[in-house]
Image (cartoon, helix red, strand yellow):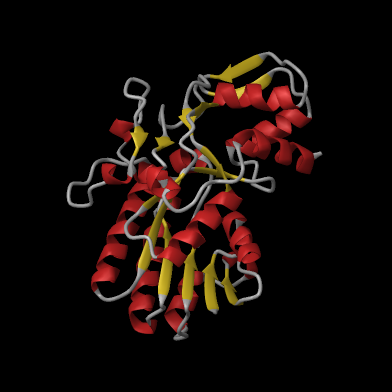
Length: 288
């Protein structure tokens, strides 16, 4: 199978390369001097599968601190679909995000598990910063592309993590603090903000299984396990066998209050293999 992976040198791309090893893979990544937008402008190859990961990404500091840089994703996605209309790939994997969900549904008072139907593209509700807007627009473009005869699989990953993730993200930063037995253990904000952590191996495996089974419509990728940053710190420090004091950095970016998936649709065709505890243990072992 001939496969294009945009953003293949990135964190998520590396997991797809591993999972798809043995296929004829073309990788496009600005890190390797090959810009996806330039590729879309010049290449006319037909691919059996396109895994579209090229994007401006970053942690909460980037989402809130550099919203215009994230808006470049709008251009990248637009050029992907224009290119796809010309080259007619058999299937496209488009990664949206849990950030696309309405922020009004993500607070402590409701403790609402987000389900795929909470996004209605005919009645758009405010998502999380420009990153969320870019992903909502990408989903809309994916819908138009399907009306033109393309097959686009849309996924909404929640807080994906892995052993080799950048320290710009909370999970690896917490692991580093645990391994170093940091005391106090610093947490941005109150620490009460909730996320749904899922290992990247499960994200990729669920994605490929959904493509294999031709699952229709957007799919949440998450464990459906609400975990606060305070709870994550306790799990990490417990695995590292120490009990630090917690220092909350009040005023630091912390994002929405409560973001957890309803994984019912995913669980109908794929069951995650890596629990949060197992993922923490693996990451600690890797970092040591």
